Length: 240
Image 1 (spheres, rainbow, N blue to C red):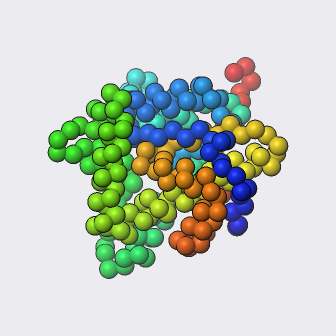
Image 2: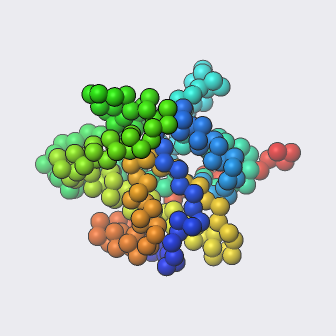
């Protein structure tokens, strides 16, 4: 399937929220963004398998009513309630990421878990400061600088991992986000799209959405076959 986009800056139609996974602040911000924007389309950095796993973890958790460490993606989906809204799962699957990394460096026998990655203290901490706590306290710029430093280290020491985790995922997520927005524009509707991504992806996705020709270029350069995002539909319940 061809990815068809308009030659426009898609950022004008999309509210993008950068998050730190499983933090109280990101969960609150996700709730507030949904309640304020009232989006018709919510795009989140998950695929169907991870969405189901995280939902099940919350449903089966005895502390679900008072949990402050729920994944912000699931929190945003919950905040929609029973309304006529679309939840779009825009990320690559964990299996696809793994296969693409293996193709880039076949001699590595590399086992990787997305869920352990996003919840691991490694990405949020260094030897000197607790970055989760800094994020909770609102020092996002400082945390983002630390993120970028670690991503640069990853790029230097494991370029095949970095390319898939960052460049290729940014490309497919931006492509799917632009596709969702294009569908609304084709209906002659003013899009109300809210997108939640890990903070490490924000700059790259926004840059791609500014110039959609870059998305097409990257899809070809990385040999990514475009497919639309998975749709999870919320239907309004009478009386809500």
